[in-house]
Length: 364
Image 1 (cartoon, rainbow, N blue to C red):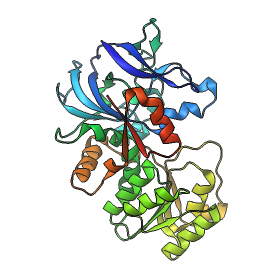
Image 2 (tube, one colour; image 1 turned 135 degrees about the vertical axis):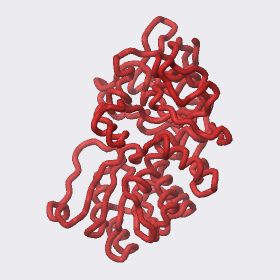
Image 3 (cartoon, rainbow, N blue to C red; image 1 turned 45 degrees about the horizontal axis):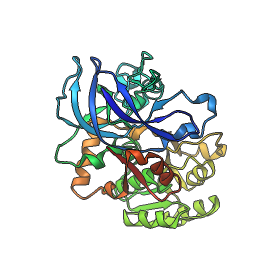
Image 4 (cartoon, rainbow, N blue to C red; image 1 turned 60 degrees about the horizontal axis):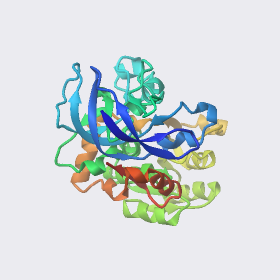
């Protein structure tokens, strides 16, 4: 079938909106008509990597929401007409998947970031007959329709607004899941969240859901700290790393119980780590490059550092939970969303980059 999609043809070039030919779904795939797709930093990582890492022209997008239009012969639990949110893919058979740690699938890169199905095939062809990369995070949702890995599909209540639900597939579930699943923030405890973008603000909202006693938001932008306060932060900090650590210790009376980094900035991560108490845990989801160092003695004092992928989520359970919390008024992530048409995909990227928009969402 013919579809319209935003294609990235070079790591440094703009998206181009093109007509592509889309294959029919295979036995383990679902055809989804997209209603919307969030834009996440991960969609734009090729902007930050050397040119040799660019995998060729492809359709990105990994926070899709839409309606099922066809299902493969081997797909169970889904029907034509189902409303769905799309999330990351996983192999389902490695050690991590076997124990329910789906975001840590041992074949995560192959199933999500190779620009193809695990067998190397691609689902899109352009008007010149050129093959275009597909199945980014199992979905490639910057397209009016896409064939999606069945493991990436989560059915949701049709009463919810699909225009807003896409970000639950990655960014929002990562921020909220870091607090509720990875760190398991306890009532009355103290938590630091560094970076008040979409991930950070969803973490602030989740910390309020968890009934944390002290919620500290760190960012360099005053407008984002104002939003953090609106959504539950009890203290905000802006400044250099030394000021961040000092502010955390002052606000908590000796050190935080938990910290969650969304910045990927090594100096900020270390500042948050040094603001923990001796039993504190730091979760890291921000994507950074290069090295980060920690003082040796601080590492044996009882603190814990852990990576965070997709908020340690089991998407089929966690995404509906977040959608229900939103419907109940306890998790207002929809207020972070600004919508753009597919034709304005480059404006959406620019607005995200300059910070004028927290969470851009493409509407089809």
